[in-house]
Length: 263
Image (cartoon, rainbow, N blue to C red; front, side):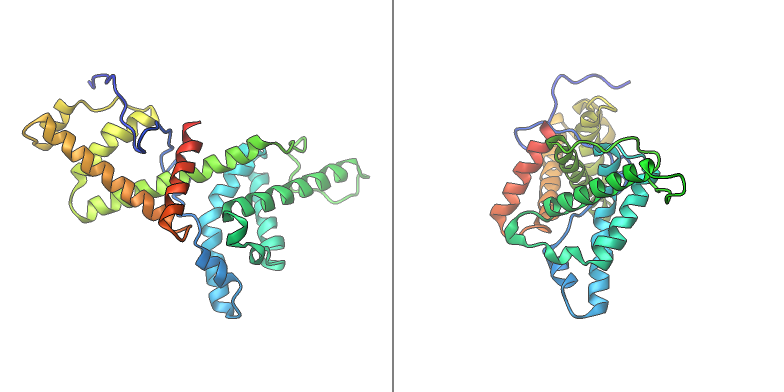
């Protein structure tokens, strides 16, 4: 039986964060690359289609969870709404070409776009419900009211982005540990850091780590954990760097990530 630990070690320096498992987050999300946005504007139809496919695969889970959790739409109806958004705004009107890096983060652009589309469609649904009986039936019939637009919705949307970012960094770390045959680093990191943060397990005592992985002393186990945390930090920076251009912006995004997850 695992012993309770009185200390909690942080993944991101100076702050304690709460994360979801990749399964809870539906799918690890490597965010978007502005190079993909540039390809959406290209004249090459093949490159444009490939870029759109990649962008949609990246953001679909985040958008769907936001519609369910942030706007209170039942899952089936959220799926219908999101498919409509993709068909109308993304494919037909090519709205992604309006995104500009100098105007701010792409995820903020996408949040505003999907929120406005959702409000518009939900208001149409309400109008249909007040119309005569032979009016077209809405695919969003299970939603009873149009949610209010408030700051908490963007907070929830950003929280899903942050959780997916952490999940992607964790997934990359596990793959790297497997490739390097250093699963001891992954298991130490998971048992000492991740599971306690998730609230599923108490932190593994260093004595357990010594016995399980053949360390000579608890200090050796602590040093291995430091190595694992540095690996995670490096991979987290890789994930974030996919979305920005400079090292300063990487640090800014990680500070934003810490702020969101520690609230």
